[in-house]
Length: 335
Image 1 (cartoon, rainbow, N blue to C red):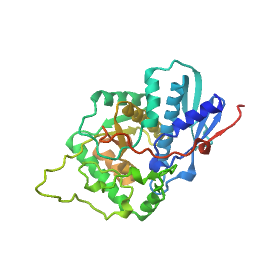
Image 2 (tube, helix red, strand yellow):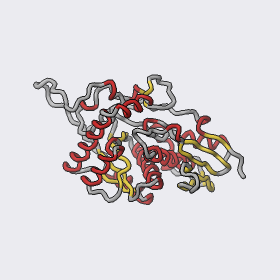
Image 3 (cartoon, helix red, strand yellow):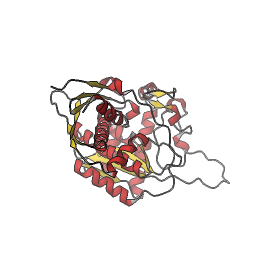
Image 4 (cartoon, helix red, strand yellow):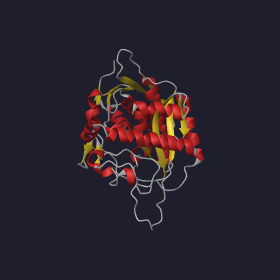
């Protein structure tokens, strides 16, 4: 693998989503291997004190790198935590023998550039059962389980925990200050959350049974109810997206990386099928609500990622910026 080839692979890897678009990764290319390290300078000490979300994000980046390699006609192998003496060396992606590129390889790689987080309401159209079965089948070999949140009791319990966690976030000055540091008003920003990608309406007022994270919460008046509106008007149609939960048996860095890899596969598969997603990470991010989620849903293991999934109501959507590959990738001579 030469520098140009690795540059293309890392460009794909860095399209991975990350918590607050912090892009917490560094890459080193050496011969046929690409080493991925966590970047501590891009940490979120308030929201993500253990680094769990950042490690999950790096797991997605590793999976995207492997997808890009396969679409380029090269076998790819991912080794997790290859250096016990360096806990921030999260993965090594190895380029192997030439391979025939399948239509599925090409479709997944093409989806990397189109995938984006969709925070607007989804269309009232059901997600195909076959897709959910495929997502479960893709995650299983990685040791990651996928649970669709179904039934009124599960939905009510989970939606309540998401709302409760959002309330905790809004009440934390430290959290709000950290969030503001990652908001970007410049549409050309290369990291952080672009304000243009955040719905203008308060998420608490839109007709949905799921509360997306409010990235401009510090500038809003706290609200815990829906406005009454015009009593003569017909009630708005409530968005009811498909909500899926990814989890693992363990809760260490290996589990987080595997959850990230499974998440990467899910995101690209959904994009290929014309679906969009957005995270509902408030509940898994706060320890108290994460613990209650395990109990209320009778989970065997640990919830790692909660997502809403559906068909987008708008075409395309704003794509968050990414740092230039030259800022995150360095080359070393093969030994």
